[in-house]
Image (cartoon, rainbow over all chains, first blue to last red; front, side):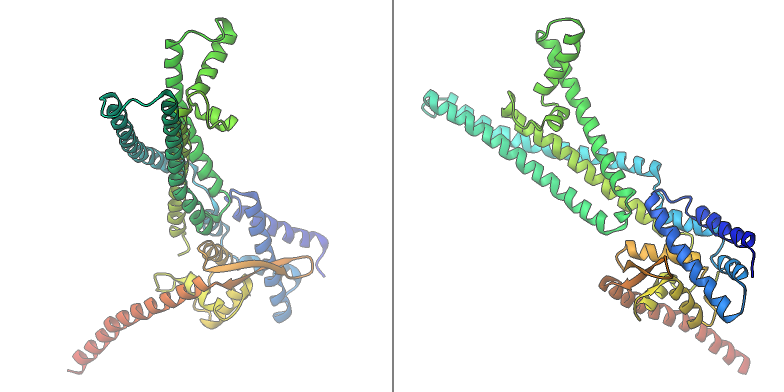
Length: 291
Length: 117
């Protein structure tokens, strides 16, 4: 009967092997699950030589370990399945985000021009006297309709941009992106990137506004901090909208459109990042050293 | 490790074994070695990344089942998508094999003809 020290040595061999092959697996839950599965295999593989070849427990355990394959090879195969290549995802995410934002910005610009042209045509028609100037109450109604139209456009934009995001998320969930490490990475990277871009854009706008308008809170440190913040909110800062859920405000005539832009930009870029992550993980899977 | 001369290799063989019924990793390793007369012996540790890849692609599904006392093992089942992938890969393999046969056997026949002459 093998003594306790020898059996302890075998157990630690197994543990060391399992630790080594799962060292490249990013997610702890994944690594635990893989170790548990491999350990179950080792247990089963140990029983057979004991029963059929009469090996003692220790030799059978070593035999089972020997048939698992070189730890470096198994680790490489597991790494290819489970490891997130952060640098590649970041590069592809930024590239896809920039390209997606460019395409989106162009599309938005064109559509907004069309909408504005339609509105301008209406204004010219009124100003040129082709229409009898409406009473003030009707002007208010028109302004209200204008605001509603802007909001409707923004909602349509948001829905249109969210559709590919939802499709990408579903496909990522179904496909290689089921690995929990890649899914949140892609989405968070995309959203962060999009919000950062939007913040820079809106931040620049807010600073311009501050330069042109008298301070609200006066001078001093409080005014220095609070003024740009308040003006950023008034300038439809995405951070303010995200934080406060503020979809309509003093600038709600254009604000609806800006909210739509911000959320749909974020959604589109996140979709691009998720798609890029999926492509990368599929390419990594194709490079598995085994096959 | 010997490699099956197929573009899809071992994953296809695993799909074929799973087409016969649910199985866990150890069972698949054993059956693969037995069926191929020991010709294709994949190191056991490499079967699991392959199975996980098939699972990620939705070709197999896996669930934990009770194993040895205090232990669990993962049992793999072929999905419908896996079944059609297996069908497609088998057809591809047939075409591949036929093409190789035409070259190899044609060569053997030609060499035989030359030798006879």
